View (cartoon, rainbow, N blue to C red):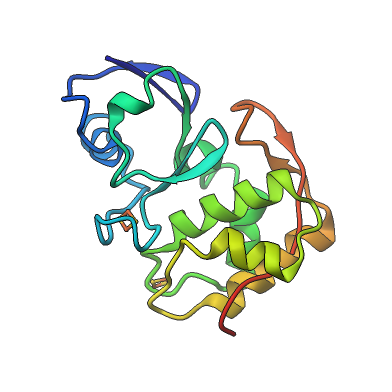
Length: 172
Ligand code: FES
Ligand code: FES
């Protein structure tokens, strides 16, 4: 089976019902995406599939053959941080850090499609991501900073381009 991750085609060996998360972590060695609950409740395993954030702990790899998959490694890294990653650092969002790649993937997907999200938009977009360290307020701040600065955002629908931005979330 072939899957396309971060713009590269990979030939993998897996049963079609194997969760995408395991294939990406164990066969491709991309471990930035985390395993949390395994039952689609926490968002730690979020990747983009054709630009949409999806929980990959319950997403069969057979369902994404032919799709464009993007992981946190495809968003940016230490050499070239994505604006959302930079905003996360500036706002000191990460604490234990475990939830953060999933949070960033949801935030990037939101900002790429909505450059002026309302608080409700943000709440909705981030509602699938749990932070046990309770960094919701800082996450909100970081998203708002990116939106206010109108910083160019990676467009998850076009693996090699940059586009849009924006603003807020739940519980303090
Ligand atoms: S590990 Fe996938 S939602 Fe928690
Ligand atoms: S930073 Fe620790 S779970 Fe979110």
